[in-house]
Amino acid sequence: MFTASGLGPFAGQAVHFHLVHKDSAYATNRYTREVERHLTVLEKRLAVSPYLAGGSYTIADIAAWGWVEYLARTQFVLTDSDGAARWPHVLRWLKAINARPAAERARNAGKNLSFKSDFDEETVRSLFPQNFAGAL
Image (cartoon, rainbow, N blue to C red; front, top):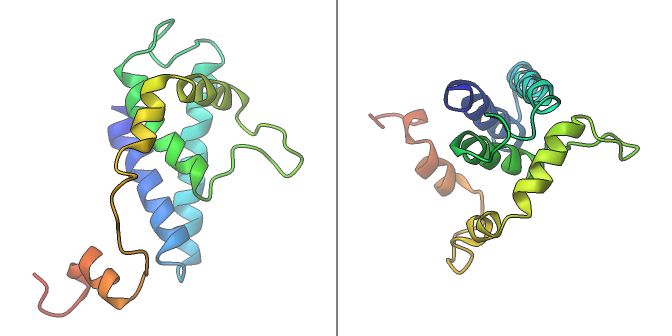
């Protein structure tokens, strides 16, 4: 539930406001701080346990990994400007999961597919049709 109701939604919103709707400093800050809070919760848990649900890799790790991996590849740097880990236990956990063959397969899924890369008005209208008159 932590991932489904907290980490995932807040991570998604944070990425959206960092990369798409950059005009709202309030929203960008709000969701960034929430993601940092969620990463701090993960940090505290992973300080006492190698994985989220205890000593073994479980579905809890799989669910959270996708969001943390995505955050690490976008704007959320898990290290500070000196290279020190901001959340060292999260970083350790992320590296351990990234070393798994299944994680590599997941990251490579769809790499052979071609997607439009221009983030123009057509793209915005397709991704967010509810923002345009008569959409719904």
